Image (tube, rainbow, N blue to C red; front, side, top):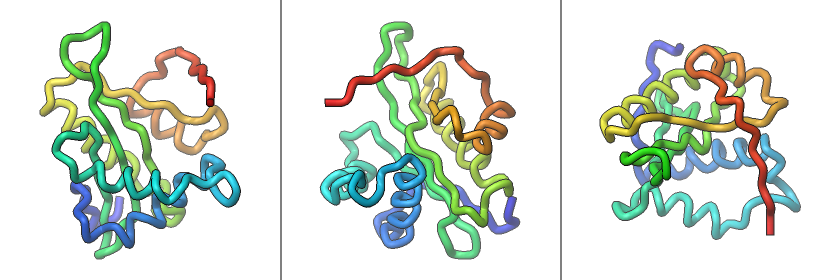
Length: 153
């Protein structure tokens, strides 16, 4: 992990550095060019991080004044728990920061916020081909065994 790594909540002035990370994350999952998210979705996502009525949160990893990673998480209700559960929706680091502990530091900070919120669990998903990230995930969590289905309209 870079010696100067700081994981913190995103602030409005982070937008210019956050946006390339967001775009990189989306490109990694095939949302670029003709399949890119609309600018409206990006704008609304950013605004939600600063809306006290939204359960969506953004963390950034900063090293030497530059953002090198992002994590977005949200709390939601569940039918199997009284407390809200925490879903780690997006996690991304720049190529140069991979393998240096940035992703693990972001996950640890999400865990801490979840503990503070009294949630019983944190969960996330990744693509089955994302083997690099799975090496980290297998160290910091357990696979649930569930398979995700979806229908896009």
